[in-house]
Length: 292
Image (cartoon, rainbow, N blue to C red; front, side):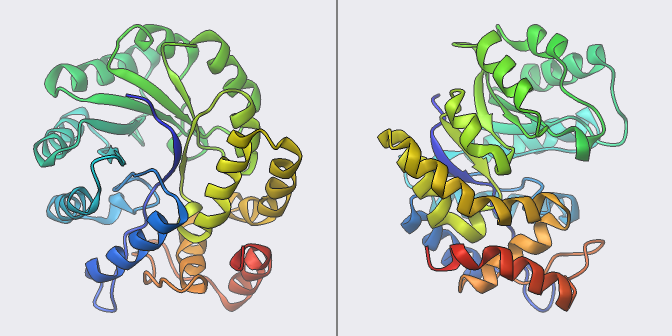
């Protein structure tokens, strides 16, 4: 399975009664498709999976699967704290129609390398899916080490890694060490162009929820070979991306969706709404992108 293009890590809209707003999700995904999104990743961290019941997670997966066209990439977020729960979530996604899942490291427990390899292999042994690893040590507490990647690299069902460490040297190392075995997927949004230079053909992108035209245009420009234009576009994107990386990532993305004309509500607690000052700061950063 080849991962290509800008694949939004979807937000989950909530209405004023704190219920999932599927009408808003349909409008939102329609706008992302029009901008050039190549697929969908529901129930990732941007989708606030941690705040949802199993029933809600299933409803989101079913909705996105039904919305998706046959040529769009589908990757289900099935993360959970324990291996047993990950298997349950992954089996549910498989039954709904997802052949690929995105898995970060189990949070809170901070497993050792050996435990992490056993965790991923246990999931793969239990459910017939492809796996995109997700390395995000600032959020999950540990890194998917090269020892872990070495242990997983020859499994044909481990197809990629979304690299969100923010460390470009790791991306370069992954691209060179695992070429032809593990696909490098951009997950460090403020250095996305650097990832493209180093062979990342896909970008699993939370910010594309509120700046889809710009993200997809950057991807298209790079593929066209116009590197000067791509650098200029990345400069325009950088301030907003950097603001997102500075904190309150999901809240800012949801506010950005409102500014783009596809409101998706606010986050569930413990994530609280942005202050007026935080809104003003992010709006200023997003301003050059609003009318891309």
